[in-house]
Structures are given as structure tokens and as C-alpha cells.
Length: 458
Image 1: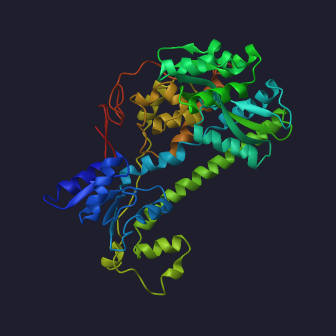
Image 2: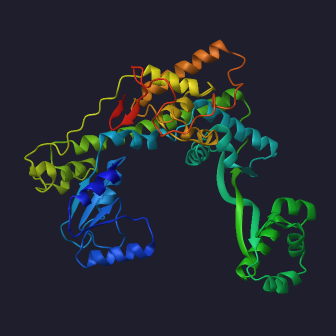
Image 3: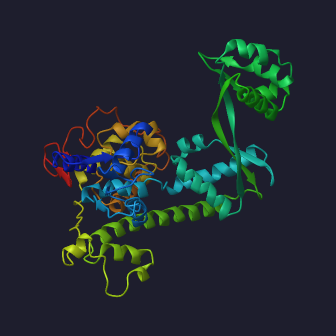
């Protein structure tokens, strides 16, 4: 949405000397843009602009907190000249920004299952204090519907708060290599008679171009240590005989003390971790609210930003910058922001429930309705379903509460079978544009609804 608005700005300035630049893209194009900027051409810099180049103007899209905004506008004017920064802050994009805060918090049951799995894996691997626990985080993410970033945070809590384990260097289970020059490889690696080389050559399996070798399996069969096999592969790679890449990463953690085996203790640890995640989520949403509050203030914007960072001394008493929107408008707010969420749409909510069969996780239902991806949603291909994101304009807390009520009612009605259905979809969805519902209505009337800026209309 903000990108389209940015295009309209450029189209509204025929013959202007402005050019649009963005930090992404090919290196050569970024260099040419930087040269044009140095030559005096005015550049409209999106996000963090061109690194190493002078900036004359900058466009900053709606930010999730004042810290990000301050960091990015600081990239303008590095040549010491006066620069102009424009903040694009659209109320309709608020739900998109809020997704970043809401998306990383798993359900309480997922956190409990995660902690129990860590404890069970330590027992299955016969890990004692001082030993190394090997973890397949990709499997954890899929089974417990927890994002990779969130998994890292949960493991960090087990390390820093509960002192149960400590992260060490990860390892890779499968190595793949190919021979750019087959004759060179045969002449050198083929004549290597070391046990490690013989083991690699006998256990590597050719696919189409790449050879694959499971070093753990090869080590167990041959008796050659895993370290020797990895060192030999790296030696061949460094010598230019093969091109090597590692796959199937496994995280490793050194266990610091006996892992808990009491169910109550495990639930206590998990509940503390979950509450910490919820508190962090609320803090992120509050930081987002501060951006809108700051942008709609009637006082000097740089002064308010300095006060946010505790640097009010940089503005002497009763002084302002004199050039921001609020100062130039005589104290009028820079923007007029108001966000009134729509009333809860029961018909639309029932469409979400009709499309999703399972009732084992309220946050899973809320994510689908709100349009937040997760490993489970990706595995079920729900991000392409018509109901995905259909209620993103609704307040998250209200939506989550309704989903919790629905899951609780379902579990009371089906105490023995609430987790029987593992596939989330009630039926295969018809591919439609996001925001359109399949059949029925999505508003209080009887005709289908479509999403427009700021809400829905028939």
C-alpha cells in the first residue's frame, strides 16, 4: 500500500530530478544510484537508503517502533547538508505492523510440549550433566507450531533463566559435494588411502550432480570418527577438489544439570516462559502505539523523539527545531490519526471456524483469522485459504478471546476426541484472492464481501 503511494508521488512530479532508491537489489544498480546522488540528483530513499551515499530526501514507511524510525532517518544527511524525511504512516497498515509482534508468541500448550520434549530427548539420548544434547529444531518447529526465532528465544530462556543448558557449536548431519573437475578429483582424492577417505568414497551416494553422505551413519558403520570424516571433506574442499555444502543442521546444547522429570515442574517452567513471551508481545504492541502517538503529537517532533530517548537536554528549555511539520504548522499535529476497529463480525468468524476443523489451539485459529503465518499454517497451506487474514482489522485480544471460548467449548463437548483431527482444513479451499470468503457473506448482509482500505464492504 505504501509502495503504491510512493509511486504516485513520483508520477505526480513530471520532469522532476527525483529518483527512487532502495537498499535491496543488484549491487551495480545501487552503485549507479549512489553516483547519481553524489552528482546532485535528489534521491528518495526507501527504508534505510543507500549505504555509503549522500542522501537528500528519505521516505520511511510505517515503522513498528520509534527506535527503528530514528535509526533509519539517521541515514539521511550524512553529507552534512539539510535533508528532508517523510514518514508514511497509514492506519490501514497497522494490522500488518502488529503481525510482527503477534506472530512470534506460541500457545501455552505448545510451550509445555516443547519443554517436555527437551526433557524427554535428554533422557532418550542418555544425556547427563556435562554431556551434549542434539536437537532437531526444524522438527520442533513443525510439531509444536513454533517459529524458528521463537525457538531460539525459548532455548535462551532455558539457558539464561533456568540454567538447564548452554548452546554450543551446531553440527550438520548430511554433507553434499560435487566434483567440478572429475579428473583432478580422481587424481588426488581417489589416491587417498586414509581410512576417512575410503569411508567417504564408499558411503557417498550420487544423486544427479551432488554426492550425499550421512557422516553419522558412515561413522557408525566404518568405525572412523565423525570428526575425521568432516575434516577430510573440508580438506578436499579447501584444496579445490570438491565443492562442499552442509545440510540438515542440528543444534547442540550442553546440559548443565539434571533435566526435570516431574510433570508439575515442567509445566511450571513452561508457564513462566509463556508468560514472558506474552509480556514481550504486549511490549512490542505498546511500542507500535508509541509511533502513532508520537507522529500525531502537536509538539515538535524531533524534541518529542529526543524525550523518548531520554535526551531532552539536547533541546534547551522552550526551544524547538522550527522545521518539522508540527513546528511549521503552528503547533498542529503532524497527522490526524484515529483507529476505530470494526464491530466483531460473527458471520465472518463462523466462516473461519467452518473452514478449520481442529479445535486444539486458540492461537492457531486466531492466527488464521488474523493472517499470521506459522509452521503449522504453512504445512496445512492455510495461507492461501480465502479465510486467511479475513479478520485482520479486528482487535487481536477480542479475536483471541473468542477463539479460546470456542476451543474450551469444543473440548468440553468432546473430552476424549478434541485432538483427533490432525488436518486443519475442513475441505480443500478454492484458490481466491486473499480477503474473499468462500460462499456466504462476510458482513451482516447476505452478499459476499471484499476487503478495501480500512475495512470491508459489500
